Image 1 (spheres, rainbow, N blue to C red):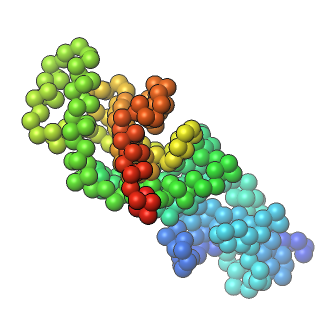
Image 2: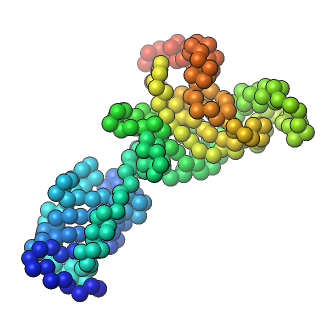
Image 3: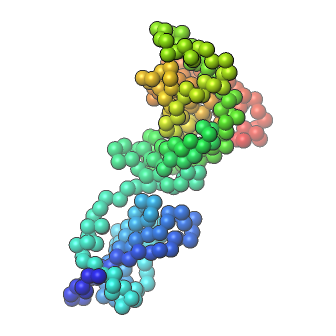
Length: 296
């Protein structure tokens, strides 16, 4: 407990743990620590909320409310808060601390802005059924919220589709991945350690040589401008540049390649989308569906 400060009718400062969760759609944020600046009447003038999951909310004269809450509008019982009083310097230190920006996804929860790249937003690792529930970090890439307000909605739709995919869906792609591996090996010098890859009899075993790392969700900024989900992996046959598996709209595999920063073969090699075999096959299939099934 800090001795009460002489405020001379100015301000008082408090720090109090709130052991209950929010009880709303953001209940999974956990419990919180409140830092409060109040007038002598007990009316809050500045407020900081620090949650278990890392989210920090700040309210004051410049921002009294937002989509997640707002500055308290009722006077506190200062007699009850006496034991939680802190020094002004302690409050100001918290107030000046830089707050990490965040976004909310219905599919994967909170994403925090990357400390190095402002247009990268990262979520906590989560289990991915496609890879036997291995935990993988998911990052929204090249997202500037003010310039692309539909990104999160479309990314959520793509993620919801992709997260329904299981081991069975993965095995349906074994032949494509195995062929990609062998084609790559045919282009490079033979090494003894590649022998086990060439000797694979069950093509599903190719996945034993793939090591999932991260998932990137990104909008293609040309032509279809769809959301693509990029599974970044390491693999035994291409240890330098790795492997990426790209799913257009989270629905279907449309690219298998090294990690080269491109979402489609047509973008990587300046081709038309019709010359991009996997992408064109998917677009053709989608266009041939009755209109009421094209959004399934």
